[in-house]
Length: 313
Image (cartoon, rainbow, N blue to C red):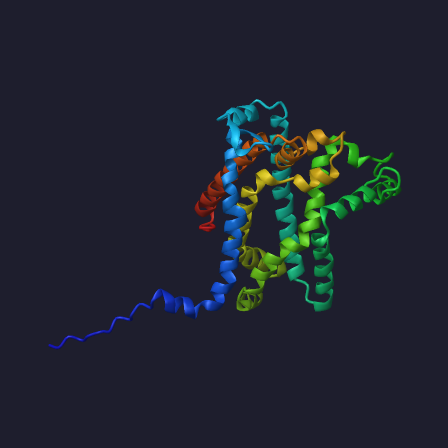
């Protein structure tokens, strides 16, 4: 009985594969080189965290102090409040932004008038392109206790009896920056979810409609389950970026009155390192924040894979 010989496909050489993918390689390699130069090479500067760095003598000639900067970090008088501020602002941002963005996305997806839908999208996207410098000016004008539109409207409606000075009330700072951040990024955040929704098979909606499912039912049983994967990924990235939240808001909206609630970890690193020239101490804080971010990323990814079966890797 003759055996049928099957020819095994020959594996292409690395050079031939590279030549075939030359277009993609030209797109990828500049990004790899850029990342290596500006992200990996500067990591050598981490050694500053273990030294008493002085600009006059340079990194390598500065005195070695070991873990002294890290001991100072855990004994820092302000660190407890700073961590609390960062955690609260980050958690509030997640708890408020995700439901708001999802509701906005689902409602916008149900708009059938193309022209009206584009107008809404354009208006919601615009704040994303406004820098926090301009946003701070807008918020200061809107929330002014003298002639701000928010106070004027609330006084006219009888909601309040006297103007509220939002910018100098520490108790209102967390809520103010959370709402401002959600407003600024609402439309831009919805883009990702709208892109995923556009790829959903329309026959699912048609079948559900034939079965008598209304708009709310179709959103709940079709659209939201299809968004589960991207929601999980976005949440993972949000948890990983928690230690770096709040810098822009603190830099532009903080003042001597609300600084106790405004000072976050990222802002403290900037203020300690660049303003007060404590380079070694700020580098130590930054290194700890990077390790915390990595830990949050791995933890969130593991939890997401167990709960939803989706993750970054």
